[in-house]
Image (cartoon, rainbow, N blue to C red; front, side, top):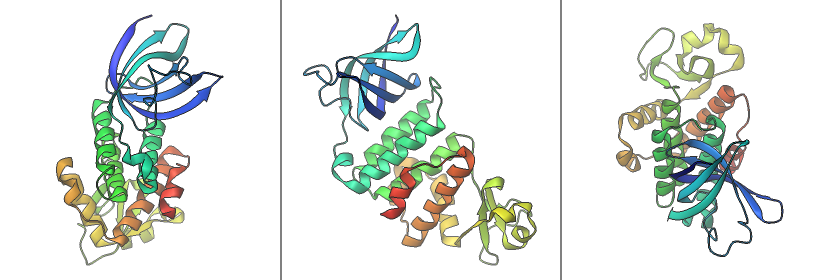
Length: 252
């Protein structure tokens, strides 16, 4: 069996048998992998305090010729992000980021940009407004996945976004429709999500800024609510499944 080393973030973990753990990582070098950690529940040296949700690690793992389940042999902590487990709101936002990566990625589909976005997000969630940070993560995630949201103009008539018309987001269009076009669209039966001009402009500005400047952005309560509803509905539409952590986040 070949041995590999890579940086990794813990996305999901559960017990297996009396002494083992099954962990899903998102790694910088190999994308999403699922591993078994033999004896991890009894380990007092190799894995103690390391195989925890959100931890940023350096791991050594071995392939299994008979299974897609690899074996993790070593793990060293790079950043444990303790604040993500001690504050419930930050915990929910980090859990949602992990759940999105779990659902949007395939095994062994490497994406170093996504790995860096995830570690950046966990770091920002420890110190900045958690809900706004999570929504900025989601905005950039859509772009990395190839779903660049069309928010600068109406997808149908191409009229630019301004205060003279109302705009709504339609998931089948992956973007906005102005009110006259929305009234004529076949998708109107599935409904659109009205967005205020302030929310649309905020999201467009966020997309134009580099991530180091994102903490400067301020989401009003209205923009937070509209953006959460937008991303929750669009994820459900694209994935054709519910992301469970959205419900917890919306309840906060």
